[in-house]
Image (cartoon, rainbow, N blue to C red):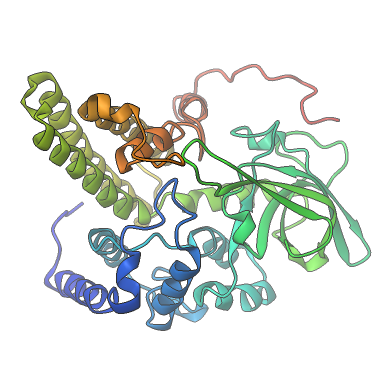
Length: 403
């Protein structure tokens, strides 16, 4: 892949940078840096207004085809936008699950009626979505889900529990993986349903995290209902749709994520210089290593995205997404540990009352989860071992999912 930008792409970068500079001002100026990992509770209503401002000026759904309300931008243009958005320290957006995950999934698998109903509100940031995948007994092992749905007349009736459901307390809709064929096991008999949350039969309970936020939730479905037409793909064939959605999860926004990582690393270096710990050659070596690894991660992400654009997952035989998740999650955890080493004794106490964490304490605590959410390291390694390297499959209980 050619890692240089063309004149047209640099012109687009200047356009994005200028627009962000002009518009991330006034009432929006105070939103800079808000809403990052572990801080989704910050200024939600104000960030929602900012997201709708982006939409009004054509800065949402950048990679979607124009016929579905998107901008139809090239891969490199999308990368440039996410890089500049991160460099501008713009606030975390509130519509990631709808815009980056559900929207592309509906474009690929949905009916024309579903596209007409749901895509425009996603583009305009008028409806927010959450993801109903994980369950207490089915976290990284999605095929073990036990949430059930049965068709009664012209509606699906849903019963079960989901957990670690990001921003469910702020969403209007949830896309849910449910078992719709009684007695089915593992990947068989699952359906991908879209369920409204504002109804009797749905209870959302926020989960307070060690960082003080509560963006994760438990969601209980007790006779919750959604129209029969709210199934994406064929009933019982939801596994393929669910896997298709996860393929969209690690797209061009990862380049913006890495710009955010670079900013976090810069703040760690600044603190090391300020408190004198930078003079420690061992610590300085860890900083150098983190810097080199981040650049390698960026180049590898660009290579993987270019392969996808060319119609191939990657030279890794289909394991690019798993490799990328393993790399960035481990790197970010180590950055949190490095931040605490730099902070020294100051990192052991909060700044004030009510558990007032500084950014590096929050980075350390939240990054402990990086190797778990979005597919744990163990699951990613199993995927690579079984599906890429062709190693024997791990033994699994034969009766799992049968109850």
